[in-house]
Amino acid sequence: MLIKNKEKVYDATNLLEGEVTIEKSILGTCGKLTCKIIRDGVVEFVEGSQIQFFAKNTMLFFGWVMKKSRTSKQIITVTAYDQFFYLVQNKDTYVYYNKKASELIQMIAGDYGLTIGDVCDSGWKIPQRIEEGQTLWDMIGTALDLTKKETGKEYFFYDEAGKLTLTAKNDMVTNVILQCDGSIEDYIYITDISEDTYNGIQLFQAGRLETEQLSYRDEKQEEVQKWGRLLYYQRVDHRLTQYELKAIGDSFLTQKCRVKKTLILKQLSEELLLKPGQSICIVLPELAEISLKGIFVIEKMEYHFFNGGYKADLWIRMEELH
Image 1 (spheres, rainbow, N blue to C red):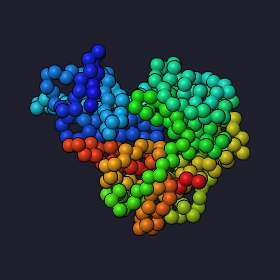
Image 2: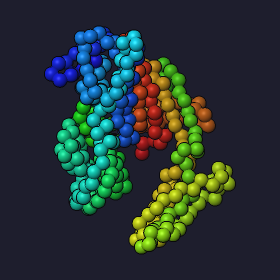
Image 3: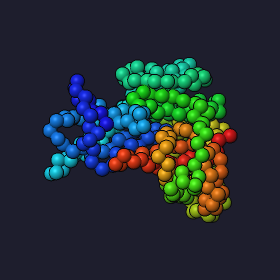
Image 4: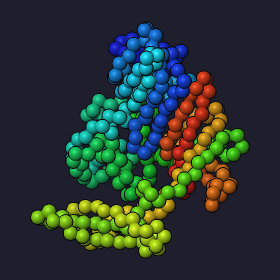
């Protein structure tokens, strides 16, 4: 672990106490590092100091110290975030025309002084877009969603060791196989309808007097009978037609009227340093009510480093590549 404060760079590796945890995701959250550092009176750092963490000769994290807490035993708990922090925290207004999602990323990064790495060409140009008072990440995420809807191609946007990176999903397929043969220590399989599941939708439009009027409602009766009524409320533009309202409702229920499934793998092998966005082969023949075998995307990872050892938790997207 290297820490840079002003012009001095310190090697803090031998001052680490306990576990170093790194969280990474392709779900629009910033990368996060947490660790405990013994205060020795030599290594000095403050909020905003750069921090780098290397594993297996690879820079796994590059970010900035954002939070510190110190105990009476002079052990400092550090929380650091990568560049994605600035995309999530900052809001702005952008109006743009005929611009690719990849070009939008480069424009925003340039305006905010962020470092970019390999940004692939996302191809399709968004005709026009007005983003008012949105976070920088929400603007980019919307552009990527629109691109996927139009072209069928998915792209993952993330911070790669201090550089904002855009990569096509199909370019992140690996030949890694994880199964209960020593490469997976354990797994957790969660099914849930309590947080992000809806079997109905209500769309309200506001008229000129800002009086909201119910304009569209749809329910999946079979799921209402099984789960009870779970209605989603959304206020939409008063200019939308019934056809457009129905399209919004149909799309929403297709995505949200389901049992949300989460699979967390406990990786045992110390030979692999996987990352979110990569596709791997998973073989779990006796997973609950299903037999799992196929290619799946890693959506989130937690890396745990301790006493020279390493383990990782992988959150898996529960859909196969096509």
